[in-house]
Length: 390
Ligand code: F6R
Ligand code: MG
Ligand code: MG
Image 1: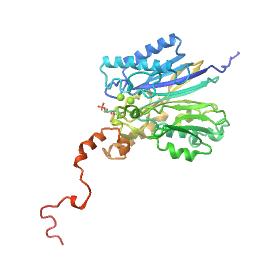
Image 2 (image 1 turned 120 degrees about the vertical axis):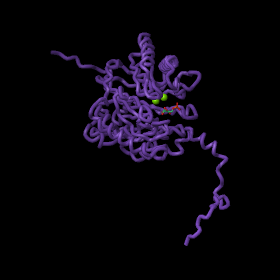
Image 3 (image 1 turned 180 degrees about the horizontal axis):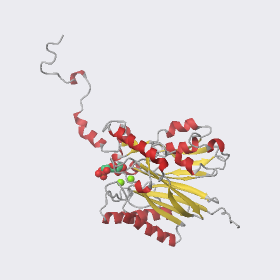
Image 4 (image 1 turned 90 degrees about the vertical axis):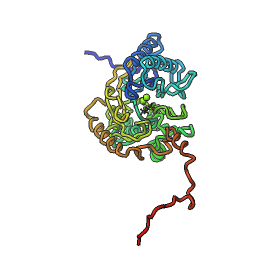
């Protein structure tokens, strides 16, 4: 029997572009009819030759358009298609009177790229290997930067990824492209020689986010995440960033199991209720990605695909596995513990991160009532307090 081994495929771009265009019920889930509208539009785009293939998936109230094509990254054609798809889906959401219709469609006039318009995007271009396993991650009720810690674990921690110690293609390590969200600049850190410098930055995921990861021996792109921040677009809290990421696996990249291993701890992320709380990031199957308790806890879904000439073979729902039961138990235990803090930090975010929430309105109302801390301003103690005291 002769087996014809697969060969290298074409150079393709994988785009994961996502938006919350309306929740069912409240902010907890996506409605199947809304997802169906998006599928119909992308099917037409595939028939028209714009896309090689696509999947429309969801995590909670966020819709993820996972597309393969030959238009490269930041293509006005693909971004325009994504925008039009979100708008059509939002119209369906409006018809069903879902909650928060068009929440993430903030910009008024589409100008060729969804960046700065509300949706999040992660895109990478590469020549398809003879066998190309990838994982698309989808998050809900959390923020840009949430992937920093798991990305560090999968690409730079030998205790998570033994390939960094024993696999020739991984031993030279990986380089992280880190974006500074405050000063709008970027830098590269070689994780073999600048690990500590990198950690000093990405340990603050609210400001610094790992955007891309490259293999040091081949220079090939290994991972990309969305770092789009809704508050920076809207100027106030309208919803969380709910990020996405694409990771290439096997061979000169971490194995599927090494990538997933980095989610066996329910890491603390920001988001959850009103985007104003720290909570555990729970790895779940897509069917369990409907954050309900206290609008959470935050969720992450991992969809695995094999690519075949740019076509998606899959998804396999990778957290749909008993191996992640303990991470889910841990998440529930942490959720119980943190919830006991009620409105107190560190469950509630620190003041700096509350800046974009309704906190600023409360501060404004009380502004005139504050008195300076001088001696004369000390409250008087009236009555007979102190009488008879020694
Ligand atoms: C978190 C989120 C929800 C809402 C909350 C209040 O990302 O979307 O927790 O913030 O349900 O929503 P509104 O203000 O729309 O009633
Ligand atoms: Mg929402
Ligand atoms: Mg969401």
